[in-house]
Image (cartoon, rainbow, N blue to C red; front, side, top):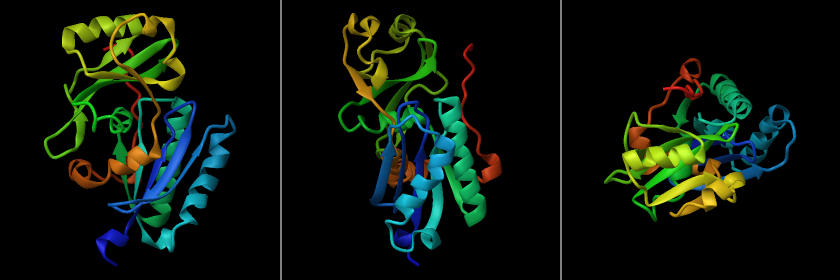
Length: 227
């Protein structure tokens, strides 16, 4: 079997609004499904995975790797998505490629902006923030490794001025219309994480920078609120 016949299953469950799964090769997305219902994710995710795998010829025997968003994000969603990835990895004897949710969101916009600030919901009106950019070969990376913003919109803006002004700030869709955000200048773009981006982060230049881990090594990213 040639390398391009191998399949990658991507899982994105970090959001409280949307869960998505995708399957593809190292070059192409072959099938995608998303769900915006508030139903029981733990009971539904396996069925959504089976649904998209059934749309691709000989999908299970061709599965080579699972790529999963590891956060920051919804505690429950991440736990369920990572548990699904681990279960399939053990059953199929394949590796898992963990992907930062900051990178998942940034990937959708870095073809238009050289540097973005990604904000992810931390609950109670607070956010985690990370600057992301592309390398010369087109891989998504943290622009300032080790620097993460955290707090309310107003506090994030204060912290941002001491670090760097991004070309665009990516915010969760359900927070994009908040007055605190709208009262400030700058380009604010409502964005959602997607399994398509998770999959693309295992392709091309991004693949060369990522690492594959075993099920026992896979852990979610739950940043400490206090640095």
